[in-house]
Amino acid sequence: MSPFKAHKVSVSEVLSFIPEALLSHLSITTKVDHYAKVLHAKKMFYLLLYSILDNDRLSQRSLEDTFNYSGFKAVFNLDSAETVPESSLLDRFLSIAPAYFKEIFDYIYDRFSERYS
Image (cartoon, rainbow, N blue to C red; front, top):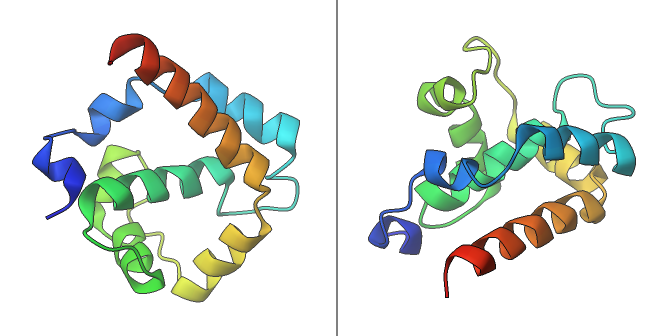
């Protein structure tokens, strides 16, 4: 069982701490989506977040399965017909500047530190 499931943390609860405007702003300032046509950094962040909260272990296969899962697409209002092979996900993760994820982590950490001891 995922440690997050044991604490009963939902994706929507975690998302309430992360403003959509922050993800869009970071996408522009870090230029992570400059060449991206389909797999924008925000979508990749959502995939990681959902996968961490929903899966016991992360792998390329589990990320692909999660991305192609209708429940994931429904939570984030993604096109239900969109599918992506695991190799494309891996390539996209390799091309996203780590600074994008670091900034999101720092923001979430600060918000959680204010709210929880």
